[in-house]
Amino acid sequence: MNKALATAIWILTLITAYWMGLEHDSGQSNNSVVASFDENMDESTLPEKNNFVLPDKGRTPRPMEIPFEAAVSVIEKGISEDLIEPSENPALAIKLGSSHPLERLEAFIGLLKEPNAGAIQTALQAYESLPGGPGRFSELKILAFAWGKVDPKAALAWSQKQEHWDKHVASGTIMDSWARKDADSAITWAKENFEGEENPYFVGIINGLAESSLPRATDLMTELPYGRVRGRSAHILFEKVWNQGEEVALHWAEHLPEGSLQEFAYGELGEKVARSNISRAVEWVDSMEDSSIKSAVSEDVSREMARQNPTDAGEWVLQMSAGESRNVAMQEVAKVWARKDPTATAEWINQFPEGTDADPAIEALVRQIRKSDPQEALIWAASLSNLEQRKKLIAETEAVIKAQKFPTGRNSR
Image (cartoon, rainbow, N blue to C red; front, side):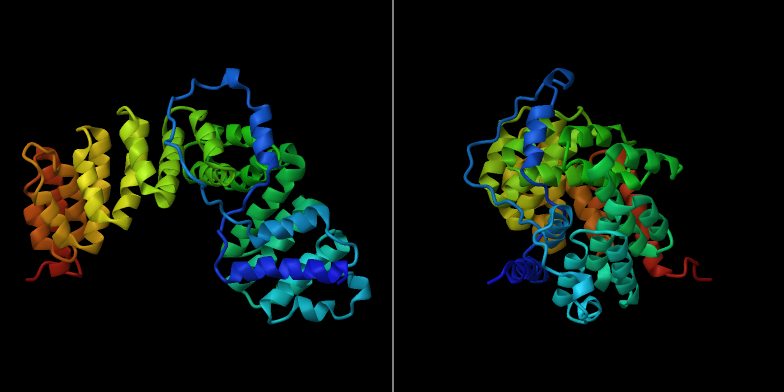
């Protein structure tokens, strides 16, 4: 078996796994991310660690590498010189326009494994000839990444002429590619070509920069203003560190600035651990002292636990010490449980020990049932102990009842 055939089979295997739904939808990092994180992190400039240690664990499942990252590997490094040579393969145009997605993707990857102006033009023509819609997003990402490596400014100029999600996918992927090669130039361009705080270009930049310097990507993310861009960037970075193992993710979370970002990271970590081992997650929460971080972890762990077994989740939160952590956990359990079985949720609340603050659970139940059973929701809303919250919830529920009675918003005459 020659190298070309072996490589083609390898690429097709990765892509086939994607189409079968075996892959995750976020880009994954390679082992250099861990090395750069450990070697480049300046401990003296970071806040003091929180002494949170997860209980001993078994092997934590790792996300698999997705086909786009496999394509990126081909484009960045090249695999073989004889996989697909456009000038020597007259059937290339047919493959690029094939209705078979695997054959088409193989052709795009092969054409752009060592991108140049000619290859970009050929791929661009092939892409634009494909039917519109999400069915060609994979080809768009491969084209955009390769073009971003060759001429990112020209690629971005083209992306601005695209519509809807095509524009979003293309520009983000171009910035990702550009930042891997020259992050400083990508950052400068992004600042010069967008007005406002919610600069979407930074999502792609941070994704690409993390491949060479996770600490710098993290610093850039923390400098962003509070909003969707920073939230999306934080999620991307968390997935990258999680892919390197639980210890790396915990280390990363410990060194984030205190506040919403650190709470987000700990919450995500709690949810990941809960999905693989709910007992470990519960043990971890129970070992924490009450704090904003414990509240964040409690929220995500209780949500996941309620999805798996709401009865057990309900018993657990009632055993927690009174405080904000129990309140948020109680609310999450009630929210998830009420979607599945509002009657069982109501019975659970009715069995709370005397003196238990049931308001968080009651509020979650009311918000879940007030459209399907507004009169019952109104009764529950009236049972809140907090006067101000009771008035607010009753008013909101009465508004729902009125809207259902008069759908046009007009009172009957």
